[in-house]
Image (cartoon, rainbow, N blue to C red; front, side, top):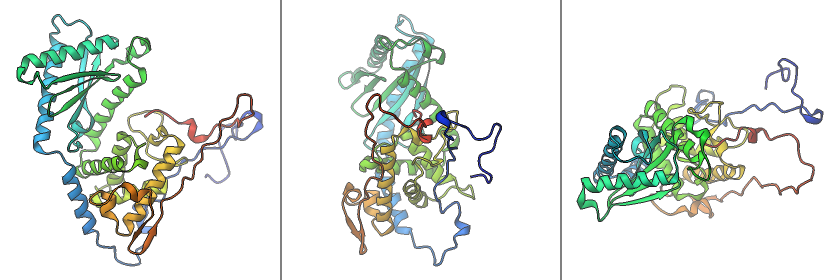
Length: 384
């Protein structure tokens, strides 16, 4: 806080009823890597070679094989060719008009995992995205593919959904995510067109992909993202973390340090758990600002308060296990997800899972007096 209280034109802000409104001052949690010079080591750093080797082995296990990557690449290339043709020479197809298409998601970013042969392509329409138009586009693309590759007819399938449609063969899947140009977003009819929030999320995915390509191309970041997504899939407490949150967390852990040099994967992996355990994604924390949105929106505010608490306590439990020799179970080389929910013993140290710190307040009945001051953290809640 600034010495002398709240300063500014007009003095302290006043809320309804004469209350002084609190000034929200976001703070970063303790991070040893940002203040290491102030905390000199009392003994040499422990040898973390086993952790480093275990993480690299786990990354190798999670990485897709060349065959899987080729299968996805082939299907993406075929679909992109069909979409390009529909943009330049649509012929008799008039259900919708395509502005452009962009690759997004883990395949585009180079963070795809094995046994998850899925790529994402965003298609931006010039016309309004009715459900009938989207299904017609999916059928047209599938028909074009079948004409190109008659041998794939028996194994190719098109599945429409609320976000667009999926096209699959026996080896890979491409999710085609449909959206429209910005000026059409105000013309949407909920009964006729795809949901506006879904369309906006697909436009955001393009911004995320562009930012990632420019800022997160270091191999350590990509390896860490793959490991964090595996961590999320294995531990229920990390389920609320979105792929975009994990991308930004990995970039922050690898690159945000005084030297501005990329940290090693094992250091960044431990740092991710330390940051989450220290409250990086809790109310009151500065968190990580979304670089693709205006207004300094913190990405973790897309989670509810219960979810933020759940992520924090899970990270605290796993960090304690990691610190006392349980790295193989945390990484996923041995054991199962029960180490986050059951009491365990590591090198004589008992690690008990933590209890929830946040309890959802009971719902107020209509007409009951309530707190007129809005919670500082709820005020900047935004969809991510």
